[in-house]
Length: 107
Image 1 (tube, rainbow, N blue to C red):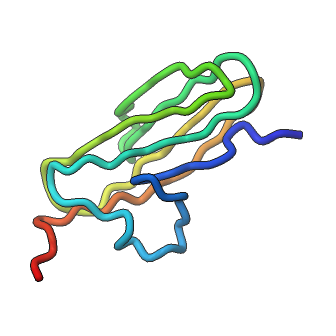
Image 2 (cartoon, helix red, strand yellow):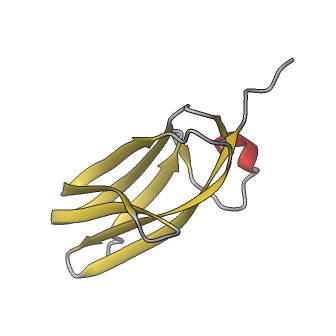
């Protein structure tokens, strides 16, 4: 059986919750690029949801295909967003930690 989502990437790197979060960090107003490689056939409904349940982005993607969304935050801090993909009778969900720094590292 094929998986609905083959791969999730943040900032063009495969997302791994155990990886040092430094590789995913961005400064205020810099975009995070979130991608999901979708397998199967037909249409898949993709959405990005924050911890309050607010939908940040929603798209329909023809499978096989790629969901891509760029998002930036105006204030520093740690954000957790959930990527939800539904299609072909399957549902995939993954939390993504997005660290926003006040300014870029100096030095």
